Length: 417
Ligand code: HGY
Ligand code: MN
Ligand code: MN
Image 1 (cartoon, rainbow, N blue to C red):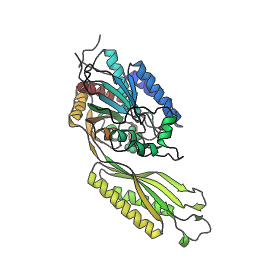
Image 2: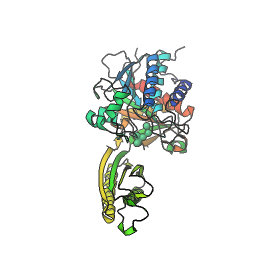
Image 3: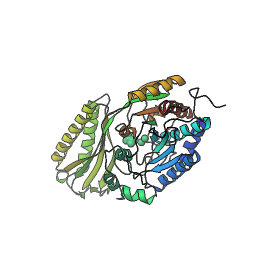
Image 4: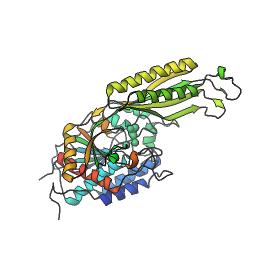
């Protein structure tokens, strides 16, 4: 018996969970998570698996010049713009099984459920896998959705280099996922992204669903400090040009600036390169990226200005050269109030506990919001932990969010007939 549209529509939570576990087998980490970095051979394997599932669900695959995958379920109205459901299959080097993957495979599950229920929609539905959301191998993060939204050029993206000096463009070609669609040529009726919270709030508040109203903004400031390589044993302390010490003091300054701007601001450093990175050589060069974020534009920009000013003063005092380049940025984003209301209503209708929330992490939705009505849905994650192989969610949490996604997408894509 096919459930009449609008009745107690829910996804097949077991099937969604099985797909998540099958995808997690590709690019396993060393501690139960994943290392499926963008444009690697395992990213290719993950893409190939996703495409096989899309083929089996009767979807038509399109790929653009950034390698982003668009799997389309046709609608009944040939003039209607599609409703997109997307996220990313690439992971951090020590990533979890659910960051990004949940959103792509929940989109596929929505389509699979509509197929099972024999429901047609007026607007087509497109399940999307954005290339390089993480920005771990190639900075910046969300680079493909950034090109799609007109924030970056294709040439800029193709030139991005990984730590081994390989370029994005070459690696995309090498894995065989360079598509022919112009990036950004597709127009969206709406864009939905379902994602784990990657923070502690929903679990702590015992809420099943996060109705995401805003996303915080971000700066990635790449500092290059120039010291003088010297012997760590025989060089007197007063003769050192110590770029490592300068870095340490700048990290302390970042912490102080973030703490001075509580609540609602964060700052830290996740990546450092020492050169020559030898135990008994003072570094000649130190490169590190400061990651600062806030939902408040003025605070975000003020933090950046203060950090850059204090870093320059620290380096001057130590005689260390200092240059800084913004290698990642997006302003705080407000999601579409009408779509936010539809997500909230869907959670209510399904009887799921929910709360409004601001996304602490960046997502492709932060860029699509510039070109289409966009909204996010979140589920809790255990201990708020993410970007860690121990990242974990429950099957119930996964399917509750997917149920909300199904219902909100259906309301937007309109059931045909
Ligand atoms: O950095 C972020 O917020 C996302 O994980 N790319
Ligand atoms: Mn993500
Ligand atoms: Mn991530």
